[in-house]
Amino acid sequence: MTAPFLQIGQAVTDEAIRTVNFFNGRLLTGGDLGREQQARREALALQGMALGDGVAEGLEVSPSETPAPSGRTAVQVSAGLAVNRDGRVLHLAEPVQLVLDPAPESEASVTCLFGDCSPTTAGNWVADEGLYLLTIAPTFVSEGRAQVSGMGDAGARCAFDATVEAVRFRLLPVRREVHDENPGAADFRNRIAYRCFGSSTQRSWPLDLTVAGERGDDLIEEMQGHGLTKADVPLALIHFGGEGSTPAFIDMWSVRRQLCRRGYGNGLTMVADPRRTIVGMAMYRQFQDEIDDIARVAGQLAQTRAQNRFAWLPAAGMLPVLNDAQVSNFFTGFTISGPHFIDASMVEPLLQESLLAPAIPTKPGERGTDHALWLYRVASLPSGRVPLLIFANGNLPYRGDARFDLHHWDQANYALNP
Image: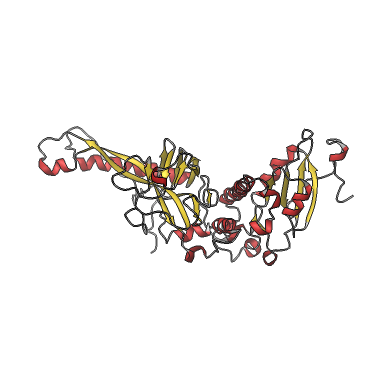
């Protein structure tokens, strides 16, 4: 449809916010005041849309520290703030213990329950083996009773004292036809995470920007047609492996994004999309969380090989408390240079630069020409401590330049290009 021609200075009223005009003598009805409340919500929603959607703070999901009634599965969600794609601000004032199934009607001791969501059915449903997406969304609850006069039974039926703008949690199954990954694979968690990060984080995306489409979180965008709505803010992926009621993993950063406006356009314009930095940060945090989970089992990290546990690595990451032999085992099959020593002041610039670099493939059939890695250790740590190991995409600039005046002799580097 062709846009209408306008004159300079002419008001554009389509889809504009309309507030009630108050003046002395006007007869006000409940509908008038309701329109005023709706106008306020629309104005706040526009501000939220200007900020962008995502999690502003908190809302971290972790295994519940308190047993749920009747041994049911539960997680803990911390207090926090988020904005959904509709611009609605979602506020959880206090942390909650969240039961992952609807409770029987007679049970009232549960702190918080999921709202109904398709295709979940009513009854004593329990999260079965499989992958689920946990979200937070807005809801409205009527509270209290207001005094009425001269309205009859019709007025009394809707005479609630307040409408509470609340939040609810939803648990959506991520079915195999959406993700098509093998849940039994050792690298399932990592593969699912990179399905959420999207193909635009891979080396091949900017090869021909003239045909590259919009960036997107592939799996999250596909979920829009499978129960996920614009009102939902994704918080975590939860996978049940079929062994008891404890989740096999809870992965926040695969779907969690900080507040940022969504870009638009083709590859030529979206190559400078600021949301790509947000996704890069999520890739880094997702890897570090998974490494922390591996390290919680004594001796497991020292025996882990990246090719077995990860399909993709972030462009840079850190490995704690591994000696050189264990690091060599972790990166079996990679082309590596190092470990070189770098000053602590160079760690943060390296990680910040890596947020825009492509992910690193680990499998032989998925490697490009950029699968080589730089390995670094931080110099000048106290004696007796194993220096932190940092890896970085081989296409990132080398950070271990010869600087003999800043390090001890045994922590200095020779120049790669003398």
